[in-house]
Image 1 (tube, rainbow, N blue to C red):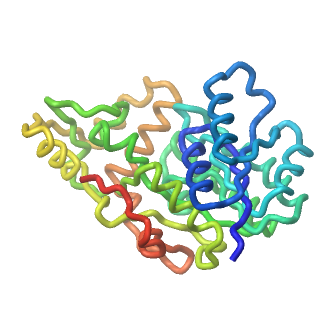
Image 2: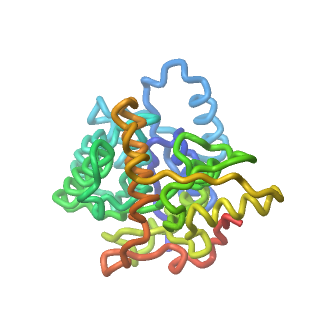
Length: 305
């Protein structure tokens, strides 16, 4: 079967650059949208040039110029969007509505993968403010996709390992302490950690797979489903030392929220749902979903240990 041509939007971002690499590695003709407004962001320009050297095609396009998006979309079979939905970086999820308009007009796209890659927003109807904005906006995008009759796959990648594991699942930290750790609640709530390169590999694997068409692909590598306590124990074993442990209740965790800036409040509420409520693992994958490590056992995912 001929492999789909792929357009990656947000290709210079944290996940986007990994998607470009994975797409090229799988032998897809890969196009990367770049904005004329890139200005003097030299690191992004250098990254784009490195993509080109690896065989990717660079396509100029802008969310402020509809026809440029239509023209870019017409070059490919599959569109993957990886623009940021994380407030500590930038939250641009609703910009995708412009991309959906372009896909609808172009009329040639076999599959669209919008910027998801986290908690499944369809299961977060009871999320608390202000963090629920992330899920609400993603659901607005999903509705637009489905109303337009655009074929899709949603990728629920759970926790980015780089952000969660380095800081031993403590918000605002990405390097582990050698002395102490604060456990969220009793520290026994399970979460799912996926290496960012593996997220990209699973995503690219799924774009030509009929089993995931118009479904959600959940990334649940079984050996990476761990509690915070288990993550801490792994670190303690690595350094040969036991950390001093204290714990924080959900009430104590949420109490200082009002004094934080908006982006920090959003991030903390996401941690709350993951680490206190277990929102990533408190449901069974039903008929509308598939699990990536079962579908693609050939991907030898990076294990926490």
